[in-house]
Picture: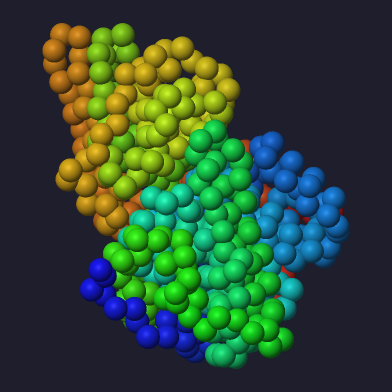
Length: 466
């Protein structure tokens, strides 16, 4: 049994943090880092407008009814919750968005669209928006970390599941909810939170919906709570709370102290990693290892007999199984969760990018032949979840063996991506759909959000002009 007894009144402690935090209490470096995480997310959202999934989603949501909330990169306007759903889908759509490494959860993709939408509708300031965003990141990161990666083992995606609780706190803060109402919002959202990993079986689009649905759940829960709706008192450590209800026996290994440890003094936002590659974060170290071997040795596919990819045991269900699908992904989304395909691509070309998700790349016979030689193995020396390590070992026809290990994935706290790198990534993504002038305008508004008296100005700037 778990020797870490549940912390008393987790919901109450989180509510206290959310209700009491103001912008002045956030360290300047943390607030600045937050704006750069948001800048990264906005660039990805704009890039996503160039893809089919975004247009199909917007068409569907528009059919449900018009509203007054702008959508990033589009001229359409939707009701608040549908706008949040759409904007979050855009941020998460290319699987290029940030990850809180210890919690194994994407955070900005749900917390920022929720904060943006609610702050704009309530005419709150840019500082209020950023404060609420930080609250969502700090709380959801801790709630996800409690499970130590176990949600993935039983088929749940923490980004949607745990993200809903963070979004409830975001919305409640911006709506001016009382401490008790914020506690209630967490109890309400327990019945809404969801996120299935079944998409891994065939590359389905449903994962893209998870962060936006978390936002919808959070806004709904916070609003119900403000009107006196009665909710369970123990949403986390109750008999059928978040962990027991989803993890079963694995809940015994949860460390409930992580849910509140260091609130307001240790900033988990600093543990959020920016993605340098458009793929599941679990694949990055192996991708970089494969690219390093390409550049160091100029390996030819025909001369490679076999490839071993060492990954953390905890991520194999996500990026290594089922083997037949991972070696020959049916679409770009499935490829983003495939160590064999990504390693093969990196070994051949020395890189992995958005172009490698095109149909032509996915059907490339030489890449697929090399991917068929890639075998994934559990890494006995993995530091997961502190880092998402990866090692690639290549055996050649002449018997030579080449290997490269990435102990800490790029973008993690130990190997951070600089502000200049984040801006460069943002501009690269914006160039897919916008002029340099437009990209610079968006960048300046995002990085200057804390000077805005009305967050609706930021949201309007992110939408196309009418």
